[in-house]
Length: 295
Image 1 (cartoon, one colour):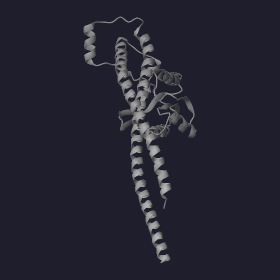
Image 2 (image 1 turned 45 degrees about the vertical axis):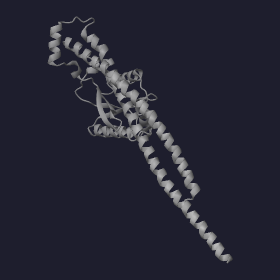
Image 3 (image 1 turned 30 degrees about the vertical axis):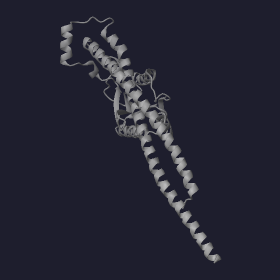
Image 4 (image 1 turned 180 degrees about the vertical axis):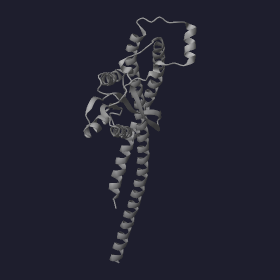
Protein backbone atom coordinates (compact mmCIF):
# COMPACT_ATOMS: atom_id res chain seq x y z
CA UNK A 1 0.00 0.00 0.00
CA UNK A 2 1.30 3.47 -0.90
CA UNK A 3 2.42 5.71 1.92
CA UNK A 4 0.84 9.06 2.76
CA UNK A 5 3.82 10.95 1.30
CA UNK A 6 3.66 9.01 -1.95
CA UNK A 7 -0.07 9.70 -2.28
CA UNK A 8 0.49 13.40 -1.56
CA UNK A 9 3.06 13.55 -4.36
CA UNK A 10 0.67 11.84 -6.78
CA UNK A 11 -2.17 14.22 -5.86
CA UNK A 12 0.12 17.21 -6.36
CA UNK A 13 1.21 15.85 -9.75
CA UNK A 14 -2.37 15.24 -10.92
CA UNK A 15 -3.41 18.72 -9.78
CA UNK A 16 -0.61 20.25 -11.85
CA UNK A 17 -1.71 18.18 -14.85
CA UNK A 18 -5.29 19.37 -14.37
CA UNK A 19 -4.13 22.98 -14.45
CA UNK A 20 -2.47 22.32 -17.81
CA UNK A 21 -5.51 20.57 -19.30
CA UNK A 22 -7.81 23.38 -18.13
CA UNK A 23 -5.52 25.97 -19.72
CA UNK A 24 -5.41 23.99 -22.97
CA UNK A 25 -9.21 23.72 -22.95
CA UNK A 26 -9.54 27.51 -22.67
CA UNK A 27 -7.00 28.10 -25.44
CA UNK A 28 -8.77 25.61 -27.72
CA UNK A 29 -12.13 27.28 -26.99
CA UNK A 30 -10.74 30.68 -27.99
CA UNK A 31 -9.23 29.27 -31.19
CA UNK A 32 -12.49 27.49 -31.95
CA UNK A 33 -14.46 30.73 -31.79
CA UNK A 34 -12.03 32.36 -34.23
CA UNK A 35 -12.24 29.36 -36.57
CA UNK A 36 -16.05 29.51 -36.53
CA UNK A 37 -15.94 33.22 -37.38
CA UNK A 38 -13.61 32.55 -40.31
CA UNK A 39 -15.92 29.84 -41.67
CA UNK A 40 -18.89 32.22 -41.49
CA UNK A 41 -16.89 35.00 -43.15
CA UNK A 42 -15.87 32.71 -46.04
CA UNK A 43 -19.40 31.59 -46.93
CA UNK A 44 -20.48 34.76 -48.83
CA UNK A 45 -17.27 34.68 -50.87
CA UNK A 46 -17.65 30.98 -51.70
CA UNK A 47 -21.31 31.41 -52.66
CA UNK A 48 -20.55 34.42 -54.85
CA UNK A 49 -17.72 32.51 -56.52
CA UNK A 50 -20.09 29.62 -57.32
CA UNK A 51 -22.69 32.03 -58.73
CA UNK A 52 -20.08 33.79 -60.84
CA UNK A 53 -18.77 30.55 -62.32
CA UNK A 54 -22.32 29.37 -63.04
CA UNK A 55 -23.12 32.67 -64.75
CA UNK A 56 -20.04 32.54 -66.95
CA UNK A 57 -20.69 28.86 -67.66
CA UNK A 58 -24.18 29.68 -68.96
CA UNK A 59 -22.67 32.14 -71.43
CA UNK A 60 -20.21 29.60 -72.80
CA UNK A 61 -21.42 27.31 -75.55
CA UNK A 62 -18.76 24.64 -74.99
CA UNK A 63 -16.26 24.40 -72.17
CA UNK A 64 -13.16 22.23 -72.48
CA UNK A 65 -10.75 23.11 -69.70
CA UNK A 66 -8.13 20.90 -68.01
CA UNK A 67 -9.62 21.15 -64.52
CA UNK A 68 -13.02 20.01 -65.85
CA UNK A 69 -11.63 16.97 -67.68
CA UNK A 70 -13.81 14.00 -66.71
CA UNK A 71 -11.63 11.09 -67.78
CA UNK A 72 -13.18 7.89 -69.04
CA UNK A 73 -11.02 5.66 -66.85
CA UNK A 74 -9.54 6.56 -63.48
CA UNK A 75 -6.15 4.90 -63.07
CA UNK A 76 -4.59 6.87 -60.21
CA UNK A 77 -6.15 8.84 -57.34
CA UNK A 78 -4.45 11.42 -55.14
CA UNK A 79 -5.56 11.26 -51.49
CA UNK A 80 -5.10 14.45 -49.45
CA UNK A 81 -5.70 13.84 -45.71
CA UNK A 82 -6.09 17.08 -43.70
CA UNK A 83 -4.68 16.38 -40.23
CA UNK A 84 -3.33 18.59 -37.45
CA UNK A 85 0.20 19.55 -36.50
CA UNK A 86 -0.33 18.54 -32.87
CA UNK A 87 -1.97 15.77 -30.91
CA UNK A 88 -4.01 15.88 -27.69
CA UNK A 89 -7.21 16.15 -29.75
CA UNK A 90 -8.83 12.81 -29.08
CA UNK A 91 -9.42 10.72 -32.20
CA UNK A 92 -9.26 13.71 -34.56
CA UNK A 93 -6.10 12.69 -36.42
CA UNK A 94 -6.56 8.94 -36.07
CA UNK A 95 -9.98 8.87 -37.72
CA UNK A 96 -8.72 10.89 -40.69
CA UNK A 97 -5.84 8.50 -41.33
CA UNK A 98 -8.04 5.47 -40.71
CA UNK A 99 -10.52 6.66 -43.38
CA UNK A 100 -7.66 7.54 -45.75
CA UNK A 101 -6.10 4.09 -45.50
CA UNK A 102 -9.52 2.48 -45.93
CA UNK A 103 -9.97 4.53 -49.11
CA UNK A 104 -6.52 3.45 -50.28
CA UNK A 105 -7.37 -0.22 -49.77
CA UNK A 106 -10.67 0.19 -51.65
CA UNK A 107 -8.94 1.89 -54.59
CA UNK A 108 -6.19 -0.70 -54.75
CA UNK A 109 -8.79 -3.48 -54.65
CA UNK A 110 -10.25 -1.91 -57.82
CA UNK A 111 -6.83 -1.91 -59.44
CA UNK A 112 -6.21 1.82 -59.08
CA UNK A 113 -2.98 3.49 -58.00
CA UNK A 114 -2.72 5.95 -55.10
CA UNK A 115 -0.63 9.08 -54.62
CA UNK A 116 -0.42 10.94 -51.32
CA UNK A 117 -0.31 14.66 -50.51
CA UNK A 118 0.03 15.14 -46.75
CA UNK A 119 -1.32 18.18 -44.91
CA UNK A 120 -0.36 18.43 -41.23
CA UNK A 121 2.58 17.02 -39.31
CA UNK A 122 0.54 14.12 -37.89
CA UNK A 123 -0.54 12.91 -41.30
CA UNK A 124 2.93 13.35 -42.76
CA UNK A 125 4.63 11.41 -39.96
CA UNK A 126 2.06 8.59 -40.18
CA UNK A 127 2.48 8.24 -43.94
CA UNK A 128 6.27 8.29 -43.73
CA UNK A 129 6.21 5.74 -40.91
CA UNK A 130 4.14 3.46 -43.16
CA UNK A 131 6.59 4.04 -45.99
CA UNK A 132 4.20 5.87 -48.31
CA UNK A 133 5.78 8.05 -50.98
CA UNK A 134 4.56 11.64 -50.80
CA UNK A 135 3.87 13.79 -53.85
CA UNK A 136 3.70 16.81 -51.54
CA UNK A 137 3.70 17.68 -47.83
CA UNK A 138 2.47 20.82 -46.05
CA UNK A 139 2.63 21.51 -42.32
CA UNK A 140 2.99 24.23 -39.72
CA UNK A 141 -0.24 26.14 -40.35
CA UNK A 142 -3.16 23.88 -39.37
CA UNK A 143 -3.94 25.91 -36.23
CA UNK A 144 -4.58 29.01 -38.36
CA UNK A 145 -4.49 28.29 -42.10
CA UNK A 146 -4.15 31.19 -44.52
CA UNK A 147 -5.47 31.42 -48.06
CA UNK A 148 -1.87 31.18 -49.30
CA UNK A 149 -1.64 27.69 -47.77
CA UNK A 150 -4.70 26.62 -49.74
CA UNK A 151 -3.15 28.11 -52.88
CA UNK A 152 0.01 26.05 -52.40
CA UNK A 153 -1.95 22.82 -51.95
CA UNK A 154 -4.22 23.64 -54.90
CA UNK A 155 -1.23 24.31 -57.13
CA UNK A 156 0.30 20.92 -56.30
CA UNK A 157 -2.87 18.87 -56.85
CA UNK A 158 -3.77 20.82 -60.01
CA UNK A 159 -0.33 20.11 -61.45
CA UNK A 160 -0.66 16.41 -60.62
CA UNK A 161 -4.05 16.35 -62.34
CA UNK A 162 -3.28 18.39 -65.45
CA UNK A 163 -0.03 16.51 -66.15
CA UNK A 164 -1.92 13.22 -66.00
CA UNK A 165 -0.12 11.82 -62.94
CA UNK A 166 -3.51 11.41 -61.22
CA UNK A 167 -7.04 11.22 -62.59
CA UNK A 168 -8.86 12.29 -59.43
CA UNK A 169 -8.04 14.22 -56.25
CA UNK A 170 -9.89 13.44 -53.01
CA UNK A 171 -9.73 15.42 -49.78
CA UNK A 172 -10.28 13.55 -46.50
CA UNK A 173 -11.04 15.86 -43.60
CA UNK A 174 -13.28 16.44 -40.60
CA UNK A 175 -16.36 18.55 -41.25
CA UNK A 176 -17.19 20.69 -38.24
CA UNK A 177 -20.65 20.10 -36.78
CA UNK A 178 -20.21 21.10 -33.12
CA UNK A 179 -17.45 20.97 -30.49
CA UNK A 180 -18.69 17.49 -29.59
CA UNK A 181 -19.19 16.16 -33.12
CA UNK A 182 -17.09 16.10 -36.28
CA UNK A 183 -17.86 14.08 -39.41
CA UNK A 184 -15.14 12.54 -41.57
CA UNK A 185 -15.77 13.66 -45.15
CA UNK A 186 -14.41 12.52 -48.51
CA UNK A 187 -14.67 15.26 -51.13
CA UNK A 188 -13.50 15.01 -54.75
CA UNK A 189 -12.06 18.40 -55.71
CA UNK A 190 -10.63 17.36 -59.08
CA UNK A 191 -11.88 17.10 -61.69
CA UNK A 192 -14.19 19.99 -60.88
CA UNK A 193 -17.74 18.81 -61.32
CA UNK A 194 -19.61 20.16 -64.34
CA UNK A 195 -22.50 20.84 -61.94
CA UNK A 196 -20.83 24.10 -60.88
CA UNK A 197 -21.53 25.45 -64.37
CA UNK A 198 -25.21 24.65 -64.17
CA UNK A 199 -28.03 26.74 -62.70
CA UNK A 200 -31.68 26.38 -61.85
CA UNK A 201 -34.69 27.66 -63.76
CA UNK A 202 -35.21 30.66 -61.47
CA UNK A 203 -31.72 31.97 -62.16
CA UNK A 204 -32.26 31.48 -65.87
CA UNK A 205 -35.44 33.56 -65.63
CA UNK A 206 -33.61 36.27 -63.70
CA UNK A 207 -30.92 36.39 -66.39
CA UNK A 208 -33.61 36.75 -69.06
CA UNK A 209 -35.07 39.74 -67.22
CA UNK A 210 -31.68 41.39 -66.85
CA UNK A 211 -30.82 40.83 -70.49
CA UNK A 212 -27.72 39.45 -72.18
CA UNK A 213 -24.22 40.12 -70.92
CA UNK A 214 -21.21 40.94 -73.03
CA UNK A 215 -18.10 39.22 -71.68
CA UNK A 216 -14.61 40.60 -72.16
CA UNK A 217 -12.52 38.50 -72.51
CA UNK A 218 -14.45 35.48 -73.77
CA UNK A 219 -16.35 33.33 -71.22
CA UNK A 220 -13.99 30.38 -71.78
CA UNK A 221 -10.98 32.52 -70.90
CA UNK A 222 -12.73 33.89 -67.81
CA UNK A 223 -13.54 30.34 -66.69
CA UNK A 224 -9.94 29.31 -67.22
CA UNK A 225 -8.96 31.97 -64.68
CA UNK A 226 -11.85 31.37 -62.27
CA UNK A 227 -11.66 27.59 -61.94
CA UNK A 228 -8.23 27.55 -60.18
CA UNK A 229 -9.58 30.16 -57.75
CA UNK A 230 -12.65 27.99 -57.20
CA UNK A 231 -10.37 25.01 -56.43
CA UNK A 232 -8.38 27.14 -53.95
CA UNK A 233 -11.61 28.24 -52.28
CA UNK A 234 -12.80 24.65 -51.89
CA UNK A 235 -9.51 23.61 -50.30
CA UNK A 236 -9.45 26.69 -48.07
CA UNK A 237 -12.97 25.94 -46.84
CA UNK A 238 -11.90 22.35 -46.04
CA UNK A 239 -8.87 23.67 -44.14
CA UNK A 240 -11.07 25.96 -42.05
CA UNK A 241 -13.52 23.11 -41.36
CA UNK A 242 -10.61 20.92 -40.31
CA UNK A 243 -9.20 23.61 -38.02
CA UNK A 244 -12.53 24.15 -36.28
CA UNK A 245 -12.96 20.39 -35.90
CA UNK A 246 -9.49 20.03 -34.43
CA UNK A 247 -10.01 22.79 -31.86
CA UNK A 248 -13.43 21.40 -30.95
CA UNK A 249 -11.97 17.91 -30.52
CA UNK A 250 -9.07 19.26 -28.45
CA UNK A 251 -11.39 21.32 -26.24
CA UNK A 252 -13.57 18.27 -25.60
CA UNK A 253 -10.55 16.02 -24.96
CA UNK A 254 -9.02 18.48 -22.48
CA UNK A 255 -12.36 18.91 -20.70
CA UNK A 256 -12.64 15.15 -20.30
CA UNK A 257 -9.02 14.99 -19.11
CA UNK A 258 -9.71 17.65 -16.48
CA UNK A 259 -12.80 15.76 -15.34
CA UNK A 260 -10.86 12.50 -15.10
CA UNK A 261 -8.08 14.24 -13.19
CA UNK A 262 -10.61 15.55 -10.67
CA UNK A 263 -12.02 12.05 -10.17
CA UNK A 264 -8.51 10.67 -9.74
CA UNK A 265 -7.71 13.35 -7.17
CA UNK A 266 -10.84 12.43 -5.20
CA UNK A 267 -9.86 8.75 -5.30
CA UNK A 268 -6.27 9.45 -4.24
CA UNK A 269 -7.45 11.76 -1.46
CA UNK A 270 -9.68 9.00 -0.11
CA UNK A 271 -6.77 6.54 -0.25
CA UNK A 272 -4.50 9.07 1.48
CA UNK A 273 -7.02 9.59 4.29
CA UNK A 274 -7.28 5.84 4.77
CA UNK A 275 -3.49 5.51 4.82
CA UNK A 276 -3.22 8.35 7.33
CA UNK A 277 -5.90 6.72 9.51
CA UNK A 278 -4.04 3.42 9.33
CA UNK A 279 -0.80 5.12 10.42
CA UNK A 280 -2.55 6.83 13.34
CA UNK A 281 -4.14 3.53 14.41
CA UNK A 282 -0.78 1.77 14.17
CA UNK A 283 0.87 4.47 16.30
CA UNK A 284 -1.87 4.18 18.94
CA UNK A 285 -1.44 0.41 19.05
CA UNK A 286 2.30 0.79 19.44
CA UNK A 287 1.86 3.28 22.31
CA UNK A 288 -0.63 0.99 24.05
CA UNK A 289 1.64 -2.01 23.56
CA UNK A 290 4.61 -0.09 24.95
CA UNK A 291 2.61 1.04 27.98
CA UNK A 292 1.47 -2.49 28.69
CA UNK A 293 5.07 -3.72 28.45
CA UNK A 294 6.12 -1.26 31.16
CA UNK A 295 3.39 -2.33 33.54
